[in-house]
Image (cartoon, rainbow, N blue to C red):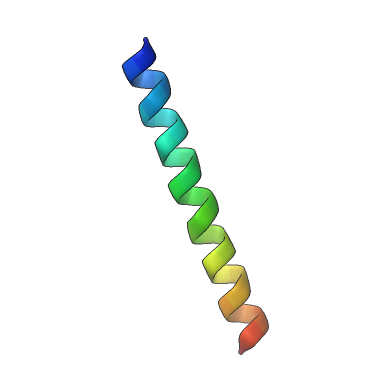
Length: 29
């Protein structure tokens, strides 16, 4: 279970950072 939780947490963090990058790129452009 802990491994799955860590994987999900990592995926959420990566997704969050990706969304932030996209939003910042849109605002910059």
